[in-house]
Image (cartoon, rainbow, N blue to C red; front, side, top):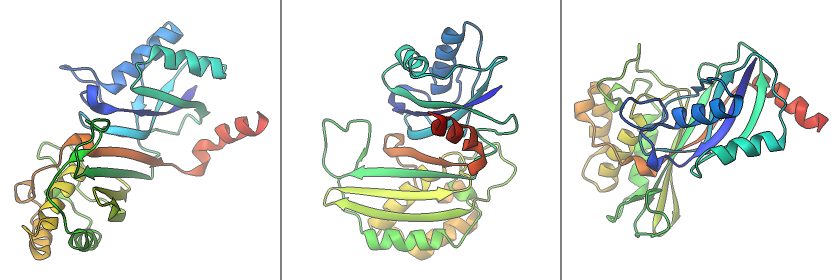
Length: 258
């Protein structure tokens, strides 16, 4: 039987989502907890990979077991007790065998947080960037971005993908207060390092060090060397993964019964 996990994590201590040979990942930490709880090896597949230091307010993964699980609050509590404090499982629910955490997802939504003032309680959770940024120019760059579908210029060169096309649903900058900015972007898929490179390039636009014309030329060049430096990982959050309603049907039925 296949089950979906809904979870969140602070990525500061991890070498990204995916299992790594040279460091602890979120995936291996979750697999270890499930393996301990079930007493046999359990492997999980995530909706997508997040880089080292990137956080997730909402992430999904799936795993398979031979027998149905009795899903109770105490079962979920016991799993969370096994996991470290920076990973939290919010729900586990059955899905059809054809539902896939990665391939069934229809969109991913990321946010990038920038703060101008140092905050002792936000260390590792936002990008502390002191220079002022011109929000209107950065939002004009977002309008340019949405006119395109090939984002090879914002992808890491070693990306193992068959194409660089993404459908961007929205992209915009929001001023939270005088000291905080948030970048919002949702697309059907993202390339390796794409959001951080877009942010890093738009920061140059916000400082009026790059023109909008130059920005569009970078997109059209399809060359990562033409884009700006990637923004640090600590400001990036995966905040929502979208699936067809049918994926959640068994979860909805269980909640109604409860």
